[in-house]
Length: 429
Image (cartoon, rainbow, N blue to C red):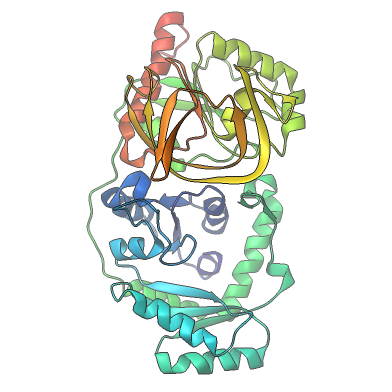
């Protein structure tokens, strides 16, 4: 993405599957929001519309895959893999192959990917982590009989290795200048090692499609919404913010690490996910903000907290005191990764609708909360359990929602905030 942008193209980006971190790197490379194309969360039709929307005023759309090409959602009847999205978009696939520990075997690997599903157009290969010119020669000679073009060779280089943490790459927001420099280095390496003209020509040969616009939220009124931002809370889908804004949300950003009070005259709070565990000490020492959050949420501030926001609202995180809005809820970091899609049903009335409201989302965390909560019934193909908090003014859980296919949920959130305005006379004219 960075290399294509440096060549003068207007580049749009997307990521297959649920992700917050990789799209933040995309945004640095392209100057545009990084989109997510998730078949489970949005459905096939909306995914195609989202891809089309991403390409407005762009010359090329680059979609990063998720896991391996054919690794899908793991849900019956829902593929959700990179291959499935490539079929939906009629998009050619470029395989990036880690060739560091192979030579002739690369041909068997690429042959398998190109022939496993003939409906997926594997149009080229980029060889990554190549040791030397001789190594590159062995690899390209092995691939020659397959007729799959080698579009580039990237040599192994320590300066192209980047920082990781227990949930993947370190979010770009934590060190934006250093990350921007790193993305520029990547772009330069790709510009030297990859045939960008061939990549662009490949993209331009993809067939064009006309699709309807993405679903929009209905405007229900103006409501000021306090939005958590900063290094500890950067996991929010841009599509959610766009739909909430269409419904009437006016976001007022604040950083829980440094701001000592919630923004004034707000009747709603949106606390997304992130890494509060990394910043737990600083978050816990911001006593004035925590007291303000505790008082205002208990007084009726409409609140939506996802994953990291859920931990922040609890009583403690690894024994460090947090906001205490959810009194008695204690979070502990673990070595176990909880990852997967969830269907959810609310067990009482809340900001997203009456009891029995159906939601979709995903979990991605290495922590546990005790007690787990009983606000939602969460179901995956491997079982179900209760979790989270769902009241008429507070929704807090591990569930990350992507509202692209359900704009009515954005409308209900804003409507709940407006109801607080009506009760307390704190809204905007």
